[in-house]
Image (cartoon, rainbow, N blue to C red):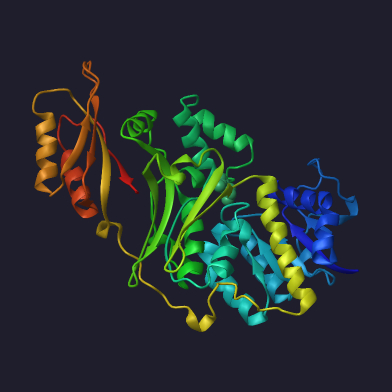
Length: 434
Ligand code: HSE
């Protein structure tokens, strides 16, 4: 039986998952592939800590070059994350004619043009299924299963940590910090968990998906990003009262002229499947002109689910090596000639319904001033809640849902409202996604 040889750089949470899967499911994978997958070298700065996965000591090295330059390695798996040295390692692997598998969404979002150009020039495969949605086969679905469609929209919960935190806060059992600590302990969070909480990780992932869906590079800095750190248990409770759940959504919609790409907390009607995707689960909805809406749901983070996506990529590349069918699917989903830069829409151009949570002194005239300003900006109010009777001089929450309004008008109105003396805090705005 033929053997395809694999080298791993980064023996952390996902790396361990990958090695464990290749060990535990070896015979199952072998009988599907018709060949042996053998990990022959693993590089990590720490090769002494016991990770609970048994590997031959001679396989371990602290020098990534031993993987990159190894003459027998066919596939290099990069699982260290971050921009550098991951970028240099991947480019070196490609230069050395080794196929690459990575889970590194940050790198692909920022340096995708460079990595894909190098891969195409050298006829090298780059597998990155694990970069978005953990075990969910979203990359392969866009590249292959949905290829008949002009994709019109992608909308998803693509950060397990943020979803875990919001779900736990929503259950009423945890505050923000406790839930985040749990997600970190379970190995879901990024090395810097602000990437999860502030929406940066979701922005990386929606940049990767946007490239594949519409065949366009995306400038990361042009994506509107707002995280969940301003969301309080009170907002979650009020959302429930209005019949909604709050989720951190990554959105990418193409109207044929420009793409609306953004990441922010969103209110979703609780009757929608996406509103009921909880814990570390991710969900990604893809809408295509021929297939309408498809939702994929699965484990979005964690050692084994993400390791399973990595192994899936290794097997796919191994199949291509064995059958001599390299370049079968272009890594960016489109042929190079089909890739064009599509402009991104400014957030000010969008329209929708809004949840607004003001914190105001409970005095006569405050509500009418706020609603007057909203009215002046062409914003109509659909519902209002103010339950607390005594403000003890510290202010009370005043919550409103608007009818359809223009973001530009909402922003202008909030600027004015937040300048009123009786408004104690910056107003929290949550967009409604129906
Ligand atoms: N930190 C990421 C998450 C891991 O929580 O979803 C998967 O990319």
